[in-house]
Image (cartoon, rainbow, N blue to C red):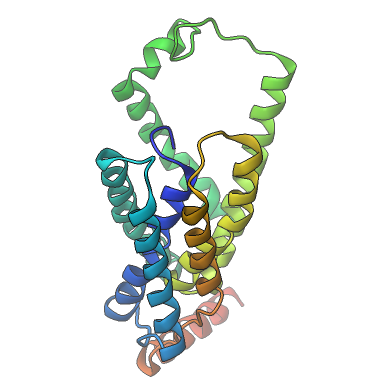
Length: 232
């Protein structure tokens, strides 16, 4: 976000459904996407290519970071879906455990990036003294509330949909982010780049979730029936 426009991130993120559709088929028991869904993902890819060709504000380092993000996003989505399928618990518990496990990672990243030393001195990354104004405290509080809410609803969506469908939903809801971006930040893509992003979101709206293969569906139904019997 610091080195490239928001549209660059959206364009690269829009390619994740392609990788997730392969993961769904190979590892998570889904059928291959139908023709309509394939055409949707092709349109998403074409939009991403058009964006990159017209992107003049990003550089090779920005693209490399986006590729790293895609790798970790695919790992995160796949592991999360497999965990949800294996271990039955409510969305609040899943959100709590994820936030709990993220604490040591956040501390490590603070140390690795040098932010921990600034925090000890009560300074920001520019060396200025931290000022806890009412506006800052309100923004931080809202961020925490919205973050927890997003985590809970993300778990609900991941429980109900395949990993590919979740990634398509995540891509399409960037429509609102794109609108807000034009009013808040000054770092924007060109008009052609913004058009490519909207084309990506438009294509994503036509994706249809692939059903489970018969064998996997029977196994899931049997597992759910066993869990209901155990609870009773």
